[in-house]
Image 1: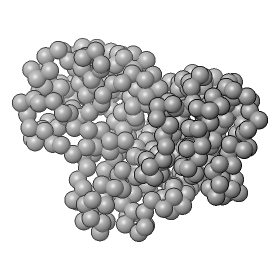
Image 2 (image 1 turned 180 degrees about the horizontal axis):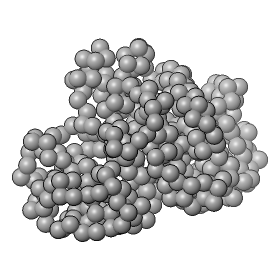
Image 3 (image 1 turned 135 degrees about the vertical axis):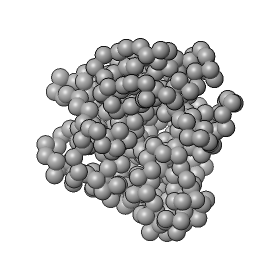
Length: 389
């Protein structure tokens, strides 16, 4: 088993949220302090129906447990009403609960009891480069990570055909099990048209109006579609930098899917090789790197704030990192193996606006070096330099 970077609470109930296939159940079942936990899997249709009809039955099923015992409820969003019972049991019997879910949308939209701070929130993602590299059985390969993504099941498959089938099935099952089964959308056809367009715009500033024209859905519906992706843990928004600088800024966010393999599956590019020096490689590299930052920030509970900056004349910084201590890093992400002044012009453009900021270019160069105020780093050295590990 790959050792995950996440550090789950041993003393307090918690939610563990993450997209399907990120390894939530595997992680829970292999944690020592949960080895003797009472386990409820709501993917079992009989159990789901039983507890849906009578949520109070949960209390009866675990009435024999002693104070401090752990209870695992897998895919808790399928029966949100259970959380009222869980809340009561935490208070009255001092039981501890590990609650996993692939979607927070049904919990939030259904007004579910989120336990009023009595449960910590954690997120699980596809493997990070560090998790893969730290495993003796695996080896991290950037090209493979950009082509196939890093969902755990990918590493159990040997051929390109098997990986292609898995990722296609993942996308199909997402629509079937998350969107249809959970009744997130009434009219499915516009959403089906939306998904490949959203994949093509991965990491770009969202133009809701253009997507609306391409899908036939209105502006607000497109906004709700992106919210569904976020709340089913398929991606996250990268907001525009919010502080005032002398350049006018665009306000629309970017959206990054959580895994490069899923982006290629939605965009129907799985059969194409991932090669250096093509635009797809550069786009995937940026998306992967920002996802890595997002994951490490979550796992290490750093509370860093991420954003991007683009002016009306299209001068852009890929990633701005703001830390609680006030330190700021402006980060350009370039897939090139040789960086020169051309790659750094946007960082240099903002030198006066951010006189105390770290100016960093992440690249595929082999060793670090300095060009003026800009530090050029190999991606493998970035995590330490950015304070993410």
